[in-house]
Image (cartoon, rainbow, N blue to C red):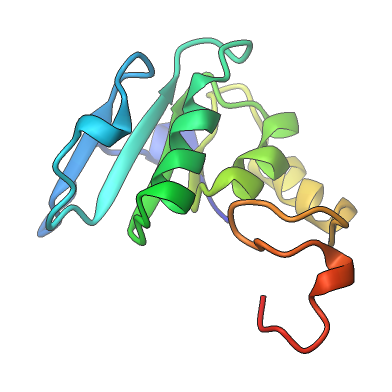
Length: 129
């Protein structure tokens, strides 16, 4: 997962067609043709609706573009964000990007399937994840 510090984040996407989706919107109602990036917002770290949106976009709608987490993004949410389909996270201003990267070193693999690796560990032998 790519991490971006809050002070380095720009909403502009030169040459990209992107959407910013409020966490109250249903992704199934959107026209995703030609969209290369979708920004999903976490207005508070306790509001997890963007996780569900990301999972819907990846697994049910087959969106292959970039999913970016914005808003109140904390270090301890990053692994779950990646597992639900996010590619990029824009960290809240008070979060340390070096500490954030260590989260991924702590959790290298999972037994369960997720939005990125569909099959559970026991069913992965001989299957490309």
